[in-house]
Image 1 (cartoon, rainbow, N blue to C red):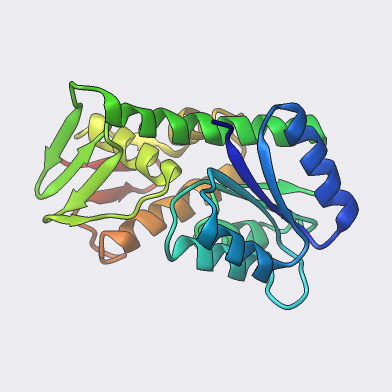
Image 2 (cartoon, rainbow, N blue to C red):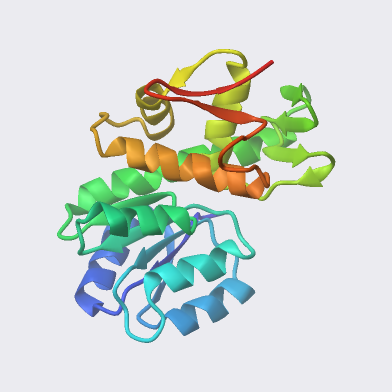
Length: 232
């Protein structure tokens, strides 16, 4: 069965270019120039990953991403013509897993898609394994093979990226993991100063889903100037 990718961009040339390169990788593409039509598609068709343009008339990519995150955890990549950190942080805050700045090289876009799909597919394929890798910490239960996580018996709707971060911290319980190490391990890219914002936003999203107080979190603790840790 082919991997299904949703592409939403009101610029026909961009949407067609993305479709062309992804079809060359044997992906099945659902392409839309209208966000509302894309939402209707998601309700009827299974989707493995979405690529959303930020600047669209009516409903922009941020709003579309937020609606997707109300129900779905598949990876979301944002296409943005803006380069300001605040725009990138906005996308990450509402649930995007990665962003690509226009103009972009099509092969870079394909590489980012593959990276997100590897992470997403890896965890979901683990559901069929017999031996589970489970970590339990103070009411938090995270299962790497089934890609599930619960807190005090309630399921946490984590995205693949959020799950990866939480698993890495739990796996290294008691140790401080630097922002640089987190970024390198999860995103697999070179760390820059602005990369810390990406890590910080994802940590904040995980805490919000765990209903953690920002100033005194019980689970993910900030070690200022160093990184993050989960106590034993």
